Image (cartoon, rainbow, N blue to C red; front, top):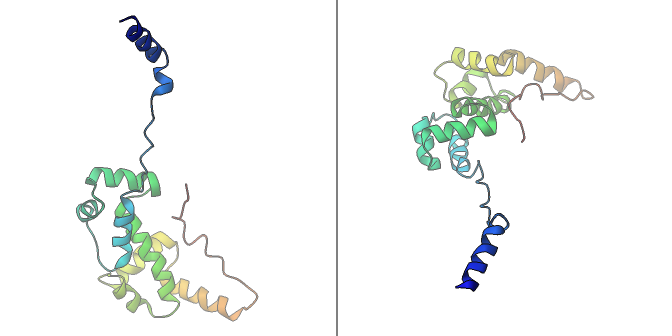
Length: 152
């Protein structure tokens, strides 16, 4: 009995050192599936419930993780993905076709969303693209146009 008491006393005195800390859970562990679903078809609007199901999280947890990782809701993040793709598409095609391909019901809805996020209209964006193409020495700086990319 004396040996057991001694071992128990030794373990209790060093218990903090003996505890194995579990690795911190990666916030983005379930988000990859939701992000892939969002970006696979930008014209498709996925509800938060659908995204939560895809990521195997509750809606509240999904919201919390999006807020922590991207500082925005899943809906806003999807809208920013659409606007990033819109920038690419607007260099090749007209506004109406771009709006249709990204799932907007009208060009005016698309234009309002584009202006709210990019701080310029689609037409002005296209005009600036054409001006920058004519000047071979000037490289366009679009870092101000994609404000949502933040690395942690």
